[in-house]
Length: 66
Image (tube, rainbow, N blue to C red; front, side, top):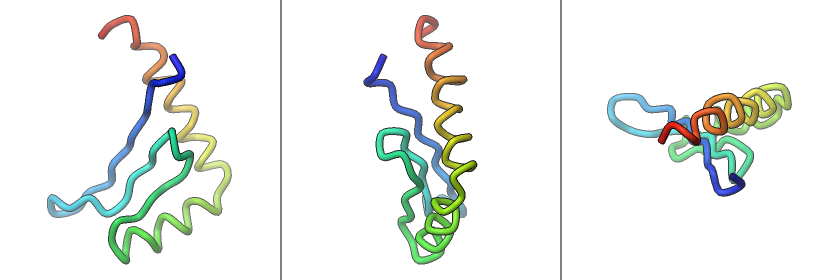
């Protein structure tokens, strides 16, 4: 179960500009706008904790389904 990965991609106009990756444990920006927002969100520890909780809520509960 440790190899399960939760990824939340944030896209605009078919371009991914930011992503949360549970293996990295933080937001990663891919454009200048995404880097700016990722730095802002990574400072908020409650946001990081909420995204890590999504891994447990979404992925781990549905591992038997797939």
